[in-house]
Length: 366
Image (cartoon, rainbow, N blue to C red):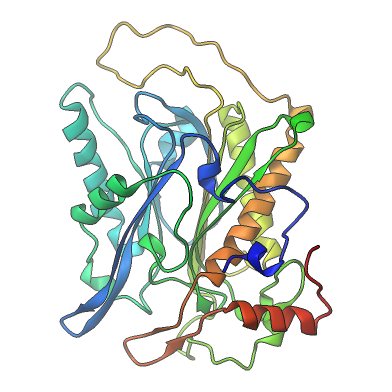
């Protein structure tokens, strides 16, 4: 179940057809999931890939920007995005100890596709920690999983919850993982689409809010997977925001900042032990020159469009709402998992959430 199937209507905006980041034309998402036992240890991890356009990200780059709310995490490739404002590779999300191998696999994929016609690439790889549910020290994600996620990348509906990079994640002390949502602006606001995809592995239960209601306080009796040796809320959340609006790099950075609002509305964003890193890209400028330093025939300039700042606020509101709903969708897509030491990570079922909401006076959307 997703939030809207339960009558939970987050915010005022209208979702796109799939209520997913893939509602932005050209955006595709693929997962590779490992969920098995190896040498007596639980392996619950994987990788999720977001392709920003229908073609090669190098041949069809997108303007992009990023924002760090809390830096207790890691991501590759962001310094060049801050410097150049361009996204020229797919985006991958995995677990903390697999960032390097995923990056190397994306480099190898680029090499296989382009040969030595390009000098280098700096892929974007983001992470969150899945070490309570996964044998993270085993580094089980490899090049095969990256290739599978790239091959599986599709438009349309996006699998959520314990899939891909989100397989072993925990959110607000419930099972977490991948979640997505979108908003489509009205024609008088530009008619653009904003989509968000999160890997939610953050938050403490008592702070959890859904549609503004403090449901976490109603669910305190459910046993937490965290013990005294753990830090409640330990983990991270990474967010990818996509739009087909013609934003310039600094406007993408401003859009990425708005992920903080969606996270705050669900009760997150205040833990020291959380790495909260966000990336936004915009595909509205469709004719940016390819990034290829070996070519000498590229133009000196390119015509650009941009959203007037007087009309950018609806995009900010859409991003905040999409992130907020994506987190709730990630929670609702989870199922109970058991840690290696026998601790249970409970699932946030639809019935459980509705009971908590109704006890606080909530009524479903009409």
